[in-house]
Structures are given as structure tokens and as C-alpha cells.
Length: 336
Image 1 (tube, one colour):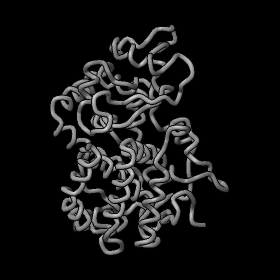
Image 2 (cartoon, rainbow, N blue to C red; image 1 turned 120 degrees about the vertical axis):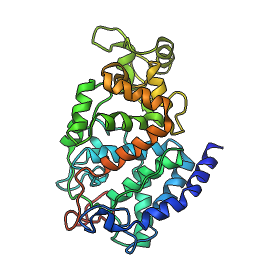
Image 3 (cartoon, one colour; image 1 turned 30 degrees about the vertical axis):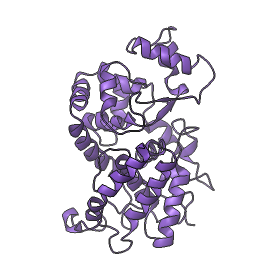
Image 4 (cartoon, one colour; image 1 turned 90 degrees about the horizontal axis):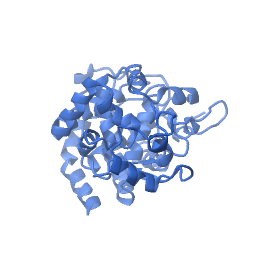
């Protein structure tokens, strides 16, 4: 039933997305070196419709895919900017970011991106970049699970390189301290408000046992669990995540609505029921972030508005435009 509902959400927003495609580029400086929503309106007018269709089919098969696609976009943008570098396989001088600590055995959805790119190439060969396709897929993943929509500025081009070290060093880890996480966001031009709002994407999806085991058994290296974790919730998690083994066992990031994009993630944090340490520290480690958590827990509309704004901001991290980069024919490899 939830999946059927997703399609009605998408249908109801069809006119909104059509308006996005037709947005006048003059609102974005009139320079095709800049990003603006109408970038493909002449060269590939059905681009957004095509991406939306493939993403809808993927989420209908597996609701979890929405979170996976949004995570790919986040992990791509934090390394060299939003340039599709994460999508590259190892080849020649390229060492794939897929094998970094944040991505190995956890990043997924690459096959869906392949399907999107294949459909775009059939419609408009060598026009729509993989970086733009992934950015659109992230927006559609929000909408299809009940979250906000927004006009996606387009015109990114694809990188011809990847950075394994950047992937290892730039992406926040589940057990990072609050200050480390905030530093990694601010280094990308994102602020505290962006950090809290974007973390709200954990209202959908799952995480592996290996990412939160430390909180259950040895948070501070003294053999004790994380004191900020609600006890009954911790006991439930220990039943699913053993002290050793079972690294790939999944638990919901949002115990209340893992398949629905809403604001219950923030309500969970107030109850000390954030799954990851990197979630709970938003409420337990900083007064300003605590106030933002409370605000978004009380007002879903406020959260949705800020989430959309922060996603646009993140999507604008160091894009390749104009004659920089290329339009990959296959998202997994450079054209040459």
C-alpha cells in the first residue's frame, strides 16, 4: 500500500517538476557555466521525467533504494564535489571510491544509476551527465517516500578522476564526534543548520550492525555501552546486533518509519533513540544543534523546507561546468 501511495505522490507533483524543467535560466544568471533547473529543457526535455520513472520503478521494487540513492549523492558531493566520481569503477589510473571505508560493502544503487543513464542515452545521447542524473535521483527519492521536492539546478559535468583518499577522509563516520562531523560539513561550505537538516535523511533507510555495534558494547573503550542510548532500545538492538559477527545485519535508522520520509527521526533523537552515534550527538553534544532537532521534531514543514534548501546547497558543491569534465556515456568509466 505504501508503494502505491508513492506513485500517487509522484503523480500529484508532476506539474511541479514540469515547471522545474521550464524554469527561465535568466533567474540563474543566464550563463550555461552556472547551474539552473532548465538546463536540459531544449537538449533533453524529458530528462527529469525519465529519471523519475526509473527511480519510481526501483523504489517500487525495494523501498530501501530511496535511502541508498540519496546516500550515493551525499557521498559523491563530499569528494571532489558533485561530479559523479563515486560512480567510477577502478580502471587504468582510476582507483574507485567504492572501496573506501564509508562505501565498501554498504554503498548501493549503482545498478539503478546505470538504468537511469541507459534510458537517458537512448533518449538524448551524450547530453545528460551522470552527476546530474544522480542529483535528480536523490530529489525523486525524497518525493517518492513522502518527503519534499525542490527545483534541482542542473548543468553538472562528470569528472574524469576519483579520489579514494578523499572518500576516506571527507565523509563523516558513524562514530565521529560532533566536532569532527561539523568540521567535515563546514569544509564543504555547509553549516550547522545544513548538518542537522541533511542528517534528517536518516528518517528513511537502514544501517549495518558494524556501524553501531560500538554504541552497544564499548562506546568509550571501557567495555560500557553509550550512556546516551535509551536502555530498552539498546536491549532490542543487542538482540539483532551481536558483540561479534553479523556485521551486515540491518536495523532501521528510524525505528518508527524507515520507509517514510517524515520528521520522526528528530523525535527519536529527543527520546535518545538515534541509531548511530553520529545521529544522537546532534541532540546530546551541542546546544545549537539540540535546538534545531527540537524545532524539526515539532514542525515537519519547517524541516522539509530546510532539507530542500540544504540539498540544493549540497548539490552545488564544486560542480564541473562549461568545458570542464565530460558527459560520460557509461557512468562507471570515463569516455576515453
